[in-house]
Amino acid sequence: MDKQSSDKILVKINGKKQEATLSKKQNNKKTFSWVLPETEKEISASAEESNIVPLKKVDRYKQERNKKLIKRTSSLPPGKKPFWFKIIGIVACACLVGIALGLFSVNMLTETEEKTPKQEKTAQAKEGKDSEPKEAVSSNSEKKETEQKEEKKSSFTIKLDAFIVQAGVFSTKEAAEKEGRKLSVPVEVIKQNDKFTLIAGISPTLSEARALGKSIEEQGVSVYAKKYEGSLQAKDVADKDGEHLTTLLQTAIVQSSKAVEGEKVEQEALKELKTQLGTLSKKDDLKEYTTSLSSLEKSIEVPLTKEGGERMQKNLLKVIAKLS
Image (cartoon, rainbow, N blue to C red):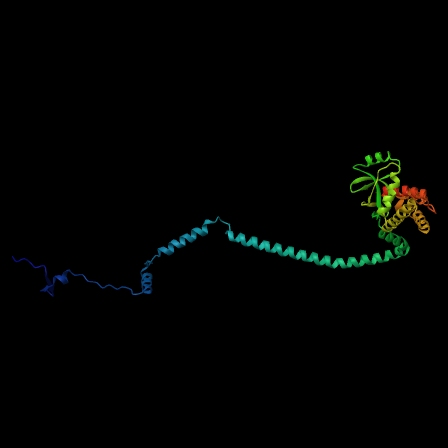
């Protein structure tokens, strides 16, 4: 029996057998048509028709970036705002406070400037009303006060142009006074160049001082004639009174020295000196020197003899010592 070929098929059609031969390729090959959508729209349309969810391409980079953004925004606790909100708030508050203070200070300044001229005007008006009767009543007293201010008392320095008959120089006033009590002639202690000097006489020139010194040496006292280098201080004395006193002392030195030397004395000058000393000794600002000035004024005799000149020299040295 022949082996039946696998590629032959017997088919009965209307009771008749027919043999059909198929090729292996046609027999084995199963074919169907593939229909692929060309666009995404067709894909989505077909998916909707068949209820199929289309797959989308996932971008990993965008996915990671979105996760990081979500983490950053979610890192703050709920209800807490970012830090830059605080900075903006602080700056805004500072600006508002500064503007408010500036406006307040400007208002204060303008108010004070407006008030000041008004207050000055009212004060001036009040002063004008109040001062009119006072000025009329106290005009004389104000004039006296201004005169007193002009003649303000101070320590007046007296510079004498004279030469002294010196009987010794000591470092202390006590030592000078102790030595002066031992001498047989009247002497006084004056301060000169931070030293204490015993003076036995005073003259306007060096030659007259030497002549006066010789008469003193005859009484057993060693003396030396030299230029007077000190200065006298009239305390609490007005300038014009101090200048007047300086002139009178200079005149007394000249006239007394002439009388001791036996020279001619100017009688009129002595009279004027006596009068002026009497007036000056009564001044209020010379009360401290009233006694010594009065003694000098009383010792002036007209005419003036040698003995009178010696008495005048003695009282003149007391005035100089008082001012020293």
